[in-house]
Length: 247
Length: 271
Image (tube, rainbow over all chains, first blue to last red; front, side):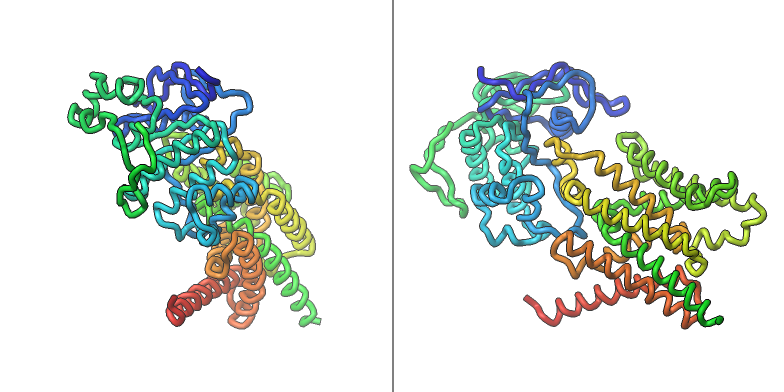
């Protein structure tokens, strides 16, 4: 396969006597979307943090030399006492022109750029965080439930956007998500985590895996079976035929 | 003659406290944004122990204060990733410092009378040397904040993001804690170990409704701090009240005034 961006060997992470991650090995390549799924408390966020060096465990994490990362954390709430506009927030991390272009790319209008960061809705914040992460044109995007606070119609649209960004930036994407339905079709590879890697593969093979069914139940496996889309959804949720095609 | 003396120490007090409160502005903004009030308080408590130890071994109290406050700040900056929450750990260290400092000070028979001064400040007793020290530290802190501004701000807005993307600048964070500790050490004589954090918290909190940018808030906080010092002294002179606490009250009054005014404007001009 193509260039390996980030890899981990035998990661083990504990908190006191609790084992959070056990013998986790994985690699993310350029140009692929890898989705991490697993029940609550299965260690998904901890795994991301260990890969990003925010949490220390045993085992090794190897980055491609000079790897640049764009990170969207699960929780992001700057203190309300900090007055800062969206544009200024992006300026702290990237060139002004790159920041403005990234905002436009994710569909945030110029007026929103002048608003206070603390005044954004959940959906707007999700887009701003995504824009901030792509502004520096990173090799690897790490997105930890990036769509929390986005409504269902916006969700499908944003996942479509994430898939497009992979092509535009030719980056790798590591994604944590609860929204199994939407995620399945867009992922090249799915890693099913429950403290260790239970199963791994493309959507079709993962949903048939006994380990997946044990975790999520056979009903969800049925519901998640990758299906063919013949339409997209506009912001209002109305179907738009012939707009895109994915599996 | 007596009125000249009066003028002399009043001017020194106004100038020293004003300079200190002004330097507290930008530092206090980050204390507020990053919810570090607890850290500031504990550093101040350790400062009291430093002053006591300084007197015990015969060096100037401010040297002992600065040394222990900086040491405490450095230890606290390493307090993350423990099973005891960082805030609790910081609180324990600080209160140990306060308790031990109090004990050492009361063992030193000769300085017992100054105990109140260490807790609530003795700004009217500022010497010219004290004033020069405050001016030097205040200027140094302001220059340091100017240099560190961008990495500190990046960290205050999105610390985890910056760390994950390799833009965390931990050195800037450590330097910030050292600057805070120095400010606290030199502020001990002005408002004391129990009230110094008020000068870090109140002016930025008062400045919040006036600002739309981080820099604006820091400038307003500097101004409000610088104004509340002479304002408090004036009140203390008029009411014959202790000077340090009066300055803190003045800052608190400005805070209430600005926030009330802001609420009133929001009500009168709905949008």
